[in-house]
Image 1 (tube, helix red, strand yellow):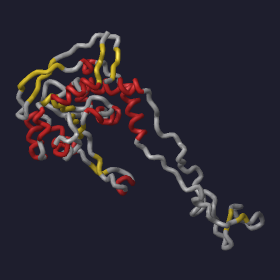
Image 2 (cartoon, one colour; image 1 turned 90 degrees about the vertical axis):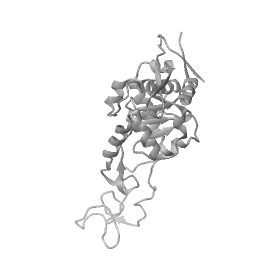
Image 3 (cartoon, helix red, strand yellow; image 1 turned 60 degrees about the vertical axis):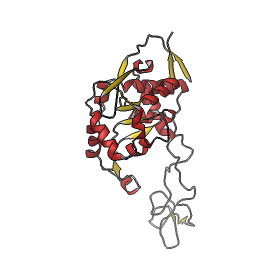
Image 4 (cartoon, helix red, strand yellow; image 1 turned 180 degrees about the vertical axis):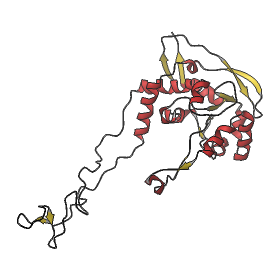
Length: 269
């Protein structure tokens, strides 16, 4: 359990619980962490740290472009004094064909930006709080018709095993328009990335948080464009604030909300 003392009073408001038909069936108190102030600077810093942690160091063979027996011919030939083969072909030098790179990428370059543990926790709490602010969610471009965020749904949502059923549930919850937005804006990537297994770019749509990793809803919802489905144990800033921008449209089941409250407990003075 993570404990953090904050120097201000937090309010615990109640939010409606919706069933699979989009109707209000109950109310639950939203954990106090959803009332924390949104620290966009910490969120960007934590996202940058988490994003760079996934990068794989890349380097070059130290002998790339150097496996040649050329020697400079010296002066008096009217040619540049670069290493050459016996037939006159220039080798080895950076500006020659097949030569070495002047400044190749090196594996010892530090790519991962570090962040303090408490800053990382505070950034996740701040990103969770941003999911309850409709203005920030709309600024990210999400489309929704519900009045209260985040969207709290009954636990029956976790048992949905077919994507067609997931689509109907999102329509009744008033969230299907955001999935359509992600589908319509899916486009071909610019540059060489489309030749390397990442041909398409799909915008991020809603985030589904369920209570258990074996829930059938994880497989049924993640088939939809831009939709991510996670459990509280692996919830990270990459899910809550893609691109370092807070305010992702979030759907949480009742059991998952209890797990989030237990994991990120905020203690007020």
